[in-house]
Image: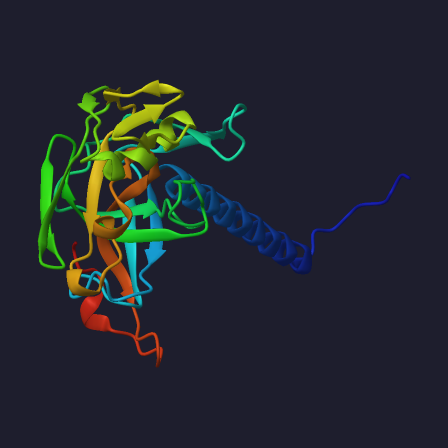
Length: 253
């Protein structure tokens, strides 16, 4: 209609400024969330330490940041042939896992020690003390034990002496458990003299080795199960009291 005009009042201007600020705040929060998701999925992850097996380096109630790029971010998909098995591929990482690294990994025997299964509900944090190509030796119950850590693609002789070290590794990689029959190793109905491993293998041990459930008990670890390598603690609190332990925060591992 002619003769009608609209006057921009101070209230309208103030409302628009408020709405503009709210919009930018929402946009900023969304951007920060996107950055968080990217970092969480592709670069870093956070884990809490529940026990004292890594004491004094890490103790119960420590929260650590671990790099997913050491040895490389995993891409995991279900195996269509073996329903309980996962196929693990890795993106190129910054480096391999080294001796001395504090390593976060999926515990391979969360359903029992009969066979390795990739589970995502239970993670362990231990120190890597031996890498592919090493022979690791340790004392236990008055005797000396040793195991060789295979490289990916390396053929290793399999016999009655080392059968207990490698049998579950072979079952994890092939889906068939080898057996000992009359001093012979039988796999897929044939006598096995050697096996070419598909994964790199590592030996994990707690710093508090007198009170640590680690590779000395459940065996060597395939690289497939490694999530990443710890970098530093970012938070720490007493599990019983909830008291913050400021002196342990931002401590490099």
